[in-house]
Image (cartoon, rainbow, N blue to C red):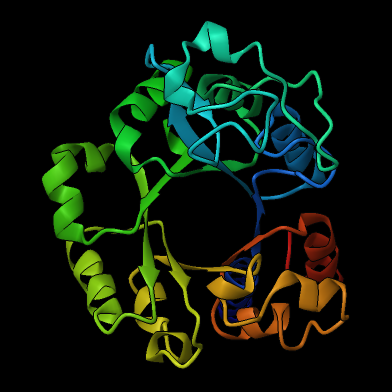
Length: 285
């Protein structure tokens, strides 16, 4: 009997360890290689692919509708010109999103509400980038759609700045600080957050990979938070990036390097290839 109890405990511990070793894949601006970036189709395609998180960017129209747009203007990604705030929602919907070849498509600029409803109930979270100015409006959308627990808010600010700006609102959201590890105060920023709240994860960017936080981030995971690293641009990871893995076939110095430095989440511009890479190593669900 005692042997069975010990065996059962070992099996539970092994299952927990396996779950903790899984790497979660974040699709940057959705599946933008096959659909217009930040389009509803891009997010739905990424979710169907099996990613764990889709990343998108928030903006607001002149009449207060929260829409999805990365740039300060709509010039690059649509056949329109100007800022999202130059248009009412009705006006901005007349523009078509461009695909990767620059061709105007029938895809419209989506709203946050449309994205959350399209992904509601699916095993995928939504990472709200460029959202710091719109937390209240975004939270209202999430509450309306019943998707508060499916969204991740984030910002590159200290805990004190976050608390001063949003007060008790931060108790109602899933939150992830962005930390620039090249700054001398980076570790203290992380420590301050851990002392005052339980962040969902820490998104950590770096041009130099010599930070002590990269060498040892167990103090983060011991507190129940996760480590989020980016593989999409060399400027965010000192060259340990997607193209090195996919175009050069060098996963050792790219994706494997990030995993070996504690990544629980990896945000990528190559979600399909990363999922295949991780699953071949039993590191993805």
